[in-house]
Length: 83
Image (cartoon, rainbow, N blue to C red; front, side, top):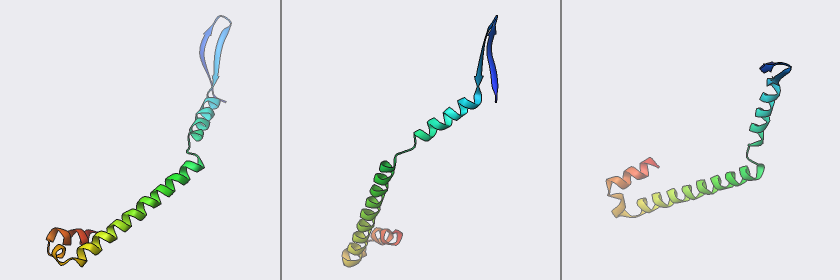
C-alpha cells in the first residue's frame, strides 16, 4: 500500500491511500466508454456512408465514360483515373 502523509498537526494526521485513488481513476475511465448501442449505430452509419459513396463514385464513372463529350475533357479523365 502506498500511503502519503499530507498533513500532521498535534494529534491530527491525514493519510491517503494512493492505490485506491488510482483504482478510482481507472474505474471512471472505463465507465466513460461508449455503450453497445452507440457503437452499433455508429457502425451502421459508417456502412451507410460507405455504401452511398461507392454508389456515387460508380454513377460518376459510368456517366463520364458513357458520354463522349465528358470523355474529351482532361479533368474528367483525371477524375476517373483517381477513383
